[in-house]
Image (cartoon, rainbow, N blue to C red):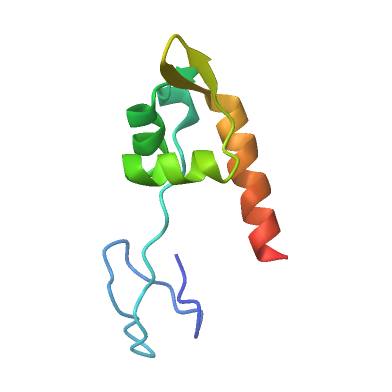
Length: 93
């Protein structure tokens, strides 16, 4: 990994660049698609996205795709990934 500011090669556990002293940003974890089940509950979606269950309920009101099984909300993993990527592109525009 290289420093984003001065391009110095950094050690894996560096918190600051030894050359310029800038803090090293923490890499954001990638969603682990292979570890998430194809159909998820609210709790599983929250864990998958790294958010709280109340945030999942708010996102449902904002258009997150889901379907009902009896009185329970369920989510299709691939639809959630597609929805999240589209949402990210919209916010970046």
